[in-house]
Amino acid sequence: MLNAISRPAKIRIARALVIIALLIGALLPGFPVLWMLSSSFKSNMDIFAYPPALITDSFSFGAYAAVVTSPEKLRFFLNSYLVSMFVTILTLLVGILGGYSFSRYEFPFKRPLNMVIIGVQAVPPITLLIPYFSLIVFLKLHNTYAALVLTYMVFTLSYAIIMMTGYFNTLPRQLDEAVMIDGGSSFVALWRVLVPISLPGIVSVGVYTFMLAWNEFLFALTLTKTTDMRTVPVGIQLLMGQHSYEWNEMMAMSVLGCLPVLLLFLFFQRYFIAGMTAGSVKG
Amino acid sequence: MSVDGRFAANPKTNNLYRIWKRVIPYGYLSPTILLLAVLSFLPIGMVVYYSVMDNVIMNQNPAFVGAANYVKILTDGVFQTALGNTLYFTLMSVVVHLILGLTFAMLLNSKLVSPFTRSVFRVVYILPWVFTASIIAILWRLMLNPNGVINYLLEWSGLVSQKIEWLSSRQLALHAVTFINIWSGYPFYMVSLLAGLQGIPDEIYEAGTIDGANGPQLFRYVTLPQLRPIIISLAMLDFIWTMQQFTLIWMTTGGGPGRVTEMLSTFTYKLAFSTYEFSLASTSAVVILVLSMFVALFYVRRQRASDA
Image (cartoon, rainbow over all chains, first blue to last red; front, side):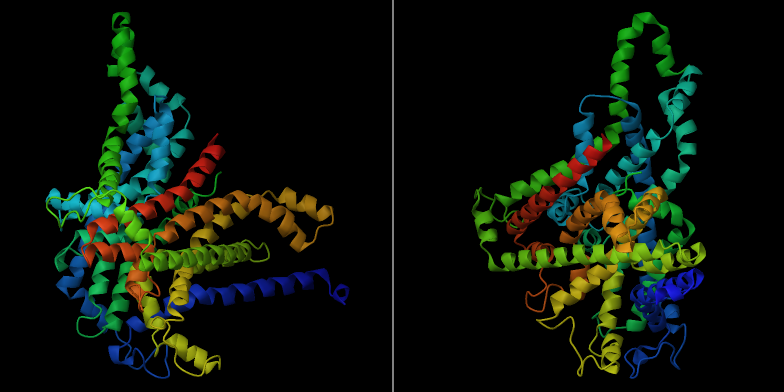
């Protein structure tokens, strides 16, 4: 029977099947995201209207207006941006220096140190939480940005060092040697020569670090206390259960809360994917 | 002239230069070493110390109690429930992540579809990964609400006849939170496996086709063996991360109803910050650390084997 169908026709059928499968599969991620968007444009009364609809008569930007005119909610965003940016900058600085050392030098304890850096990624945050809490209280940093910036670096730093070491390893040593022959130090070689050509690697580490910091929840929940110090992931939670659930505002805030990472993702898709797959795929 | 150059130029300072050269790598690593010491060695030491004392932080002069806290935690019924829940949650997530991730990666890698179509679908399929866990939790609370859209769709299609309390039912809550975690985590597999699939040379498939292999055989004897190292790495990383999942549980069920969705992470958090049993919480935290390190050891050994 199948032989009766010509080869181009078979290919066309196969292509149609793949596209149908892709469309069905796309409902799994697509529908919830669509529903989030749709709910953010509804009035809170229509959230559970029966039968549900993607676009209701109450379609408006009211929920967004409520979020962006509330100083309390804007503060969550400001906090998240500040903390994530500081974490990203510090992680990159320390990570570039560390990666350079691992890539260009041989020294005693190099391998054990490398093992520790890989291993730190597996330490559960909940294990660190209790000692961090007492350390941060002891250092009088409770409820400050510094508490979050400092503790977030435990997750972000290992990854940055591993990635930067790998990236520097792909660059020939002759580059640094040329600088040193001209009388420059290794420090000059790093910042004047290696860093500028490593920009793609630095960008992928940077966006990944930013995302980790932007999404962090457990430390932000425990190491900050007052509403004005909360970040977006924790702040959203505060919209629940105070009086009633403001579902439409929560969805609007969720959409706004996803935007920075979504935009970073769309702009730097290639770098993002490089960063994401580095842990498991070896080139 | 630079520091490196100056020392090298003068043979009399050769020794100094050699010492200097030895110090340089540690100099570059000093911020890292300092941060690692303060952010991981010190706290791990502290949490182990807390775990062998009676109630620290709340107690001014805590006394050494040896393994008493460990006995108490390991024989605690709630801890055992949390351990069981965590294992179910983690194993189910890892297995389904792999199946979904591989299926989607293969669809997205299909040469039958134009590269543009594929790239559009890839963005859609990656979406859950762009969302923060707490946002995912709220979104699914909205969708899985008894009056929410999921129940409506199920009733409309005739699959169920009454509204289901997904997140507050003793029978369903654990499955529901596992499903939410599966939703949030599969893109990581998909993207990594897609990169792996694109790294398989076409010649292997061509050789297989010439030898008369059909589609399933190519999958079984070419695709899977080629992806094996990535799959193992992914599964181990995912195991470690999922075991530590806190946010999704905390923001959807908080461990309830009862203890049905209690995980090791939520159990430990409540011990510390709801009941202020900091020593028992530290003990539980150390147990989680040991479990994670056990899996991580395999991961590190694999990474190093492939580095060599």
